[in-house]
Each structure stands twice: as C-alpha cells, then as structure tokens.
Image 1 (cartoon, rainbow, N blue to C red):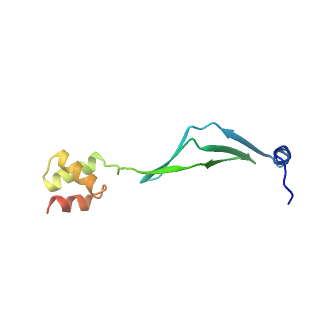
Image 2 (tube, helix red, strand yellow):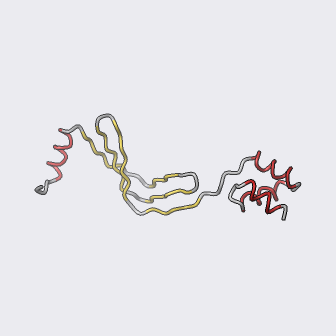
Image 3 (cartoon, helix red, strand yellow):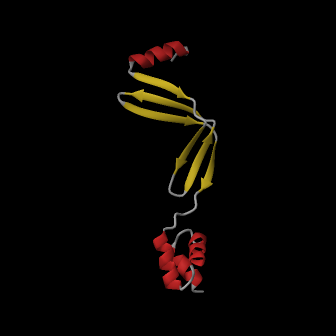
Length: 109
C-alpha cells in the first residue's frame, strides 16, 4: 500500500463513517479492583464509527497499588471474634489485605 497523506486519510475515514478527534487530556486513570494505571499527559483519541465510541490512550503510565476496601462490618466482625478494639481490628485487616480469616488468625497467635 502506498503512503497516504493525512488529508487523504481523513477524507477516506469520513467516507467510511469514521470520525477521529484528539482530546486535550491532562491525565487518564484506569482503576481495577487492586490497582490504578495513571497516564500523565497522554495522547488521547476518540474514534466514532457506526455509533460506537472508542478511546485510544497512548503514553507512559504508572501502576499504583490500591489499598483493600475494608468495610465497617468486617471491622466489627474482627473486633467481636478476636476481642480487640477498632484500631487493632482495622490494622490487622489492612495488614492482611482485607482477608478476614488471615486477620483473625494473626490476632489469635
């Protein structure tokens, strides 16, 4: 295939019903259950085709581990089962990554 200049490429994409827009993004954060992917100053494109919008993110990113979510119910359960105060129960759960059984076992050692 021969190289195509940007104007020709845009015209061809428009004929196929594809629109592309560059977004002026400062930061993009993708959160998963246990970590965040943080893109700073990324190149972000929004591509619209046949009613579907797709985003393309290009750039370097940093992976940040997220602390586990610890509910008040979990803290109360550990407090009751291990007969400890709230601060001790919370700390045990944090050290165990939110795992109730592991937190309880550590407190009973």
